[in-house]
Image (cartoon, rainbow, N blue to C red):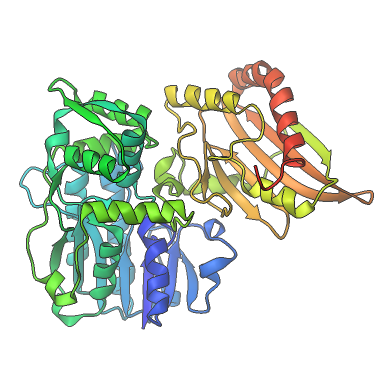
Length: 483
């Protein structure tokens, strides 16, 4: 059958796509910007086609999807802004429903959040509103509603990982005693694929959860036990939501906007209401401990399929970021380094493709760390996002406080755009070029200042750039794969 998959480049979408292809379906991946999609890999599968659409706007051309059988709605705007994400979610859902209503679709499958209390957080209330909008159309809706999703790269898992791995002793707010119903990401995927055009599920809404109902405190401590760590948690009654949000923001890799919405949701108990879907689909719910163990198997094998950090959720940017793919020349400051490559060219490419994250920036990592700390204090993303995979990188991925605009290995080019707080805009580009019979690494840092403050910033950091950028370029052409 033919399936429309929204959020195809998101955390769940990236994992759902290969499962749908394995089942023999034709998948139309709906993306906001085709430039974000890798030019190689699964998106080149013969069963995949791309459909560019921004559901914050009305979609008029439905011809590429008019004959679909089912549509998945995996769009989420929780951290688009602290004030406006509900409006964005309603607009997206309404435009999506309008599109699907003009097709031959027989089912909409929606992944939402458990909302079984009268008093809901803004996030959960918004998720419920989206479900109501999608259910109001003529195409039958099947809603799968989950709480915390546990898997390598999920926002909830990475936050818990940051807290437990970094803090032997935690002073926490009262919300850590709130009960929740974590579920392994592989169980979520089983539910999403299991209800596909299953007639009994049309027009139905199901809560799904794992084998355990736990408090956030129990989740933290069980994670510690799985990792063989001793951790102590002291709960205090005086930590306000604002302080809790800042606490999450500075200790973990989450953005402040996401931290605010998560804290507000964590105050509400989220436990799945019993239903017959688990039995109907013969799904065995995994325990929280098992979900954590499986997540670490993926991490240790460097096989993390998707990460919330690669979403624009992790930054203050939006899909318009890719307008920056053309580096400006007028009114810019440029630092360009040209280094002769005397060793293996492929090794230098490997070094470029492995930059950032655990490997670091090849020179003066403590200065990069300091810049990341300053960025975090100023409300930026800092360095904590790292990178999803140690050796592969794609358009749209995060790379510490950079976003990948172009990762074209055949063309020997990597282009990064700065998402740190700056009085201007910055690009960092790596190319391998041929010149006068020799092979060179060309490393170019470009900064377009905004006003006088931008110019003062450039002159202030230029002395550091001389050492950092020169040292980085030198080491990129010298380091070996054993680094």
